[in-house]
Image (cartoon, rainbow, N blue to C red; front, side, top):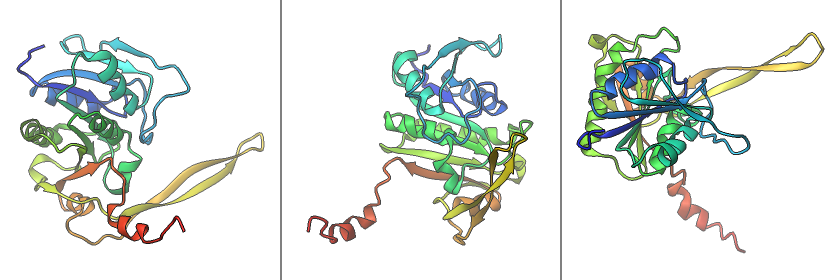
Length: 260
């Protein structure tokens, strides 16, 4: 590998053959040396799960014969992929980890369920600048071409500027043509959630089973949120941290005098 080029680790949660990661790889090849370590099957909604009670396999694969970079298929979760890449496959810490491009939104509350973002967060935990990219299109035939120039622009900035310790970027891209996208907007995570319900059914053997369903509810009217940006034709960029401490509540909690 060229020591002057940044080393970029590419991963995702949709699986190593997903169209989204193929598009992401093409962009990253223009910016540095690429290593791909991604799940061997879809891992959407896995959050930050890791494999601790089963064996983990990670094997070299060839997806396209003309690719010069190395790719590895991992039997584990997106977080597993980052862990095994940094500890077993790479000979030095990568300069950047990018995850995606996810098929579907990871804005607002979705970030905590997202395997795509958990891979990026895992990289951040290990001191690697990281970005998670998602396109608001769940179709396997989604068109990733309009996203590429924005993915490239944001990645290039991160490579140049770096990121603060413990911070990764959550980037969501609207399902629009390039000419229709108004620009890139730095946002906060919208205060929105899923109102969930279970569709209960009974199988032919008389055993009950359930399908999780629900609807997404955004009650946040702010124009500085990721949901607003996406609804209004912008790419949203939210800085995310893995420190979940509610710092604003520390003083109040100390006043509870818990030791009394």
